[in-house]
Length: 458
Ligand code: PHE
Image (cartoon, rainbow, N blue to C red; front, side, top):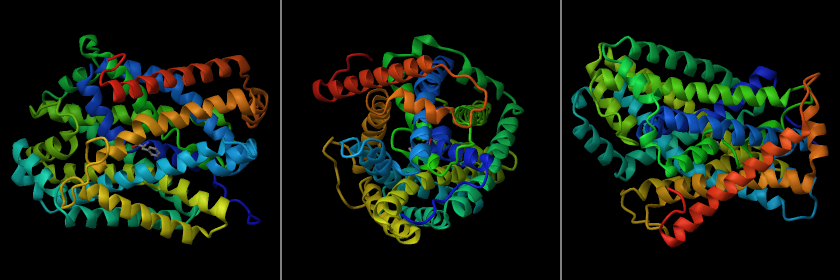
């Protein structure tokens, strides 16, 4: 640990890297499909409340812990609470990284395959025919070899970026890819809005339909607010640990959350305007991206280009998130075990890829890996991480600050870099308490549901 810690090259570079982590498949795939199915604007309203109360408090908390300790999660908790069990919150983060990246890498591979299909004109045979598009998608993901090939390729990109380090890898690539994502999405959204009938998509996405907003949609909004801002597993602790005292952590967090939300909505606009203009089914849920879109892109003038641009931007969004997950694992082995960056990244990138192979095969490619929850291993990994591991990690982080580390110390660190901005300690305290309480309630509800088979709410 005598080496000097790597640092971000600029304030903007850090914000783009953290936004890159936040903006991912969750924004472009999950948000539009769940908002569309759960009350449109009504869901968005709940989601905004969750993200600004719970999300903001935990992003700031993670940045503060990371910058204070200049360490990744395990070392960070150990440093602030030596010889206690709090370091297990850090280990939970490292475990979550394994779990999430194993299935995230598989989806990243699917995206690569769809880029290639779109370029080679493969979508044209799906034109106007979502059933065929659905069969093509199913037969691809349930086959053994091809999805694995693409998954390995996607993980190769992640390893390639992380090996180059914080400034030369993560920051450099985020600075290139994030502006491209925003521009491409903007172009696609304008294209969608100018299509005849496209504007109807906007009312589907934004008009509040309170009758569709069930209590379980509220639970969904909260869980999603963790996943979409990469919270609860120490990603933001790790990224915060490469910061100096000059960065204003509060405004940085507001930027990350604002951009994450704006990009999710822009994606929703781009997708639903196109879906409505071409008369496709907007409430398709998860099939929206891999089934509905490939069947409607060929109907647009220049469809192959629009399709390719869309999947390229989705790939970039997935990659900037996936690298942040791998960085949590890499940083653990660098900080705690003294490994070199290269060794840690290649070995653990490789191991996560192997776990991911099992996720992919569990969808039907030869191995019957039905997990203990009675669903494929792939779904188990998704379910465990977004429903339990991330919210629990986030809740414990808030409790740690309130009950162990102490608000005084926390505020001292947070105030550095804030210049004259005033910040009430009580307000921060109330936000952290609300965040921990809401999450505790939701997790309790989930556990109760898993055991008793019916939810307390929803
Ligand atoms: N935030 C990413 C997304 O929206 C996913 C992610 C979760 C990344 C946890 C890092 C950590 O897709």
